[in-house]
Length: 216
Image 1 (tube, one colour):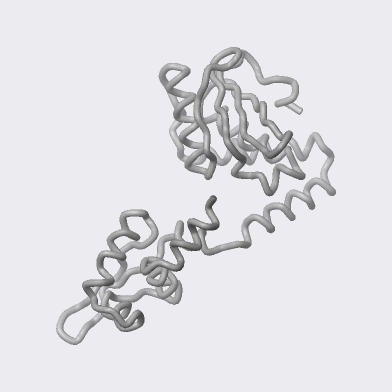
Image 2 (cartoon, one colour):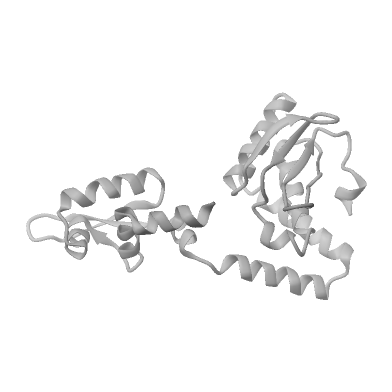
């Protein structure tokens, strides 16, 4: 689970560095003083955080002998600290559900999915290759999926749902993901999500046309 992993990170030396960098840019020496360790103890932690895309180098700051490089958190790291996105998204869906007709609500969610495509490149190649790329995209967004043979092509089978907090009450949110995958894979994608014991993503990719359930 993400929460225990996040807690372990925050309790580690690298996590302490991240907490300090939330306050603003800092040099190696400044971090070392704040943590009461040597600069040589800080540098490996910064290297790990840079490798993982959580910290990046920033401007130079005047030092006693020569300018020193400062370090800052990346936008991805700031997102990890936030606990506001899920409740805000869930409440937004609740308001939309209350104010819009079902058909309009569904249309908006599908448009959200199409716009999530952004500057991503539409996939080409064989159907299996497109399915693997779509699965990788879902995993990048927080899913845990794999590709298996489907009824009319391939099936992306998930072991959870990255939008579970929203789709549990508003399954229309899954329509955004369906539209995103259709745009990304360049072939029809239809949802076949499961929700008996817990929400699990499932998408049929390569069907001749989306199912009636997917269009609802």
